[in-house]
Length: 466
Length: 79
Image (cartoon, rainbow over all chains, first blue to last red):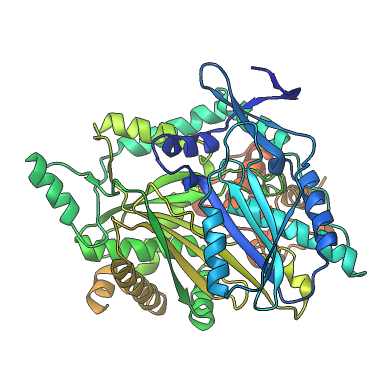
């Protein structure tokens, strides 16, 4: 297939194929939906907002992305010239805030028509707290959280540039297709791809990881008992039912500031600190110095990558083997060094990673070494346009799509209104309970604060103290 | 072009910053908003641009543009 309705078609990138990988077997296709709302405590000119949203559609090619497939079932993508749907308006001001949130959550649970159809929905809303704004739903194959934030902030900046004289119209965005072609060129057997493959093969071949559970070795022991194989190192972590819940725990501004100051002082990212916290937690619960979790790499370094939209995240297992005699800060440095190495090779295909590892260690279907995934989302709307609103209050909210193929996915984000941290645990209802998450969150925080207050203390001593 | 100017030009591919405001004392993360991923990716471009191999352990403590210029210059001189 070369064109569709006159538009040139392109193959999917590996970042998109990664979503197809679990979309294929997940019975709930809304698993790839991302829903969010942004409301502002001021009167909004909805006609003007609608005009700004259309301008946003024109500026962001990924918002006009469509999918199609050929006779063999191979997926392709293309970008249409124009968005011609009407932008909906829904007045939710006669509903309580809880009812309004439930309605938007319901919207988030409606899967998109996959073929030759728009992969996003924008609704202008008015809520009973006197705020107005937009609800936005996108398909994860077309956008990730960072490009979604980029789009919303762009629309706001366009709106502000029409309303406030002192605010300039935002600079041009970068072509999604242009960036896509670069990615496809890499994937078509480049030298860089070969280098990245060698790196990951070597990493995988070093030795077999081991599964650690959120509440200890129970699942691994069950697997050993079931198979009679005492050498087994994987377990079934996820449940058959994919129904999920989102539980959010809030860390206040002051303790968040302490963590951020620690990161600044030691020149490390918050992801490294979070990984060290998780390593220590799983070490404590499973009594092992070998812990793996999945981590997401946003892969947006250059301005072109940051402004081209689309979905770019690659998720890889991150294995931490840190002797407990090492100090907390030494552990963080070890994590930082491995993370830097992985960053250099992050364009590698994660699906190939899992396929290669699965074959090498003869993994059984549904078995894993990683009990959870971690994403740190540093970008907030505050720094991307909303700072221009001055004292006008605004609210953002993310909505659960109600399905996940993983037992537990932790996304840590900054709260734009007070700069605290939100720990968003999306989890399968049948796999992990809220009580277990509360327990884990409590210890994760305790470990991070004890460690940041005593960076030279050994990991074993920290475990004894918490 | 001086090493400093070349590096500034590369930096501007990664963050939205007015090149005129960058000095040797400008810090990558605190002043220009570099993430660790940005920084590692930029080093890849620096390696290609100057045909050098950067030692990850040695760049870990680099915080300012001036420190980066000195380190890159030392590798170029070695070559």
